[in-house]
Amino acid sequence: MSDGQFTISDLAGEFALTPRAIRHYEELGLLHPGRRGTVRLFSEGDRKRLRLVLRGKRLGFSLEQIKEMLDLHYARPGEIAAPEALLGRIEDHRAALLRLREDVGMALSWLEILEERCRGHLKKSA
Picture: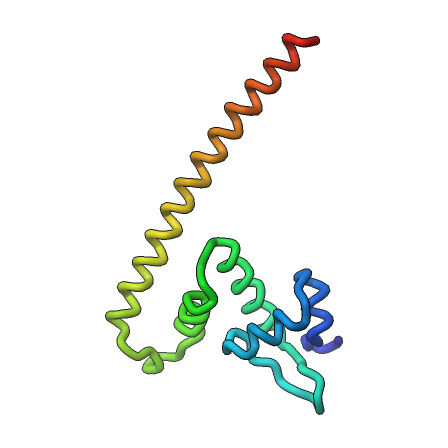
């Protein structure tokens, strides 16, 4: 569509999702499309939120956790209830990501070792 609006089909095609998945994200409050009749019209902001949702899922966060982080990110001053509790959850998210980063680093190192061994076998057999 034009002027920064996207249909559900546009987003489904761009992100390799089904329209049903996008409707599910809308039902959970992760996306907030407008409507023209029965057609959902997603803004550039919805498109960015969808990208963040998918990134959060790839990182292993639940949709509930992703919603909480998005709500916090887009909150205006005074809209955050119990900020102290949120700070604790932010630290939990940070710790989870740091553990994931460490695991990814270790996995990459292991793949490098395997690659070197594989190349060594190829040289010996040639």
